[in-house]
Length: 77
Image 1 (cartoon, rainbow, N blue to C red):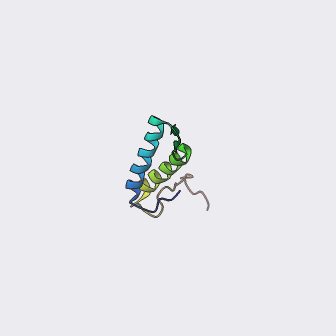
Image 2: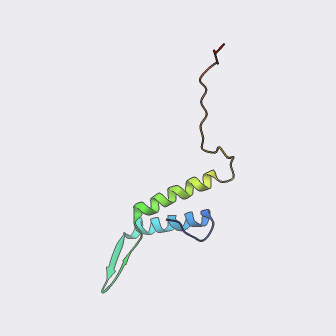
């Protein structure tokens, strides 16, 4: 799910509001003949995780999120 507007921070705020509305008011409801079904909660949570990782990783080096290993001294001679 790629939202084509706003900064990642703005998108994250919108996603969090949508998640809150589902948690506070339910996934769907019906009043008379009208009904409303909100976005899928698991999809919103996945998108939130992706945006948080994108925000956390922005402005860092090329190897951001990488790992380094130290295998001890080099004993090859």
